[in-house]
Image 1 (cartoon, rainbow, N blue to C red):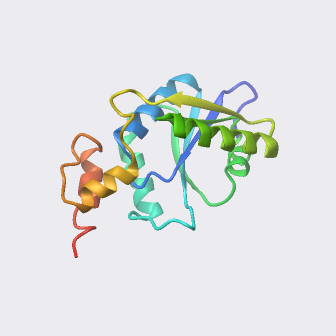
Image 2 (tube, rainbow, N blue to C red):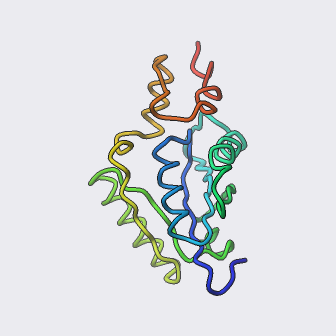
Image 3 (cartoon, rainbow, N blue to C red):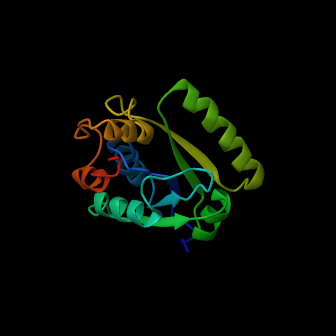
Length: 164
């Protein structure tokens, strides 16, 4: 549990795979809050390339040097998970106007379910605003160079996943 005065936020995502854009947002959010818990969500309606365990391991490796950052898995409603962790904020990233509208809807829905948990939206850095996990998977599937988009550990984890 968090102390009464600790600013604790969660940063949720599927991270399939984690990208430099995700890591930039994690680093920036970690500076804003006393504690940041990165939540790897398991969406049952999505087919993932990497297992939850692989995504947890890759995130732990990529964030190993960051203080006060924890990595956990969550199966269920985000607001329930945030509350159980003692978080008072949800951090989300915005890459585009389309993301903003989607995140606005999510934030309003989360507020209706948990008015004690705020949503904080961070704009993606310009060098990462075009990068998504979907794009990374497409590049990997077509045999392209992933070096500008993901850490070497992710390149290794994706190697051979898309060979027929």
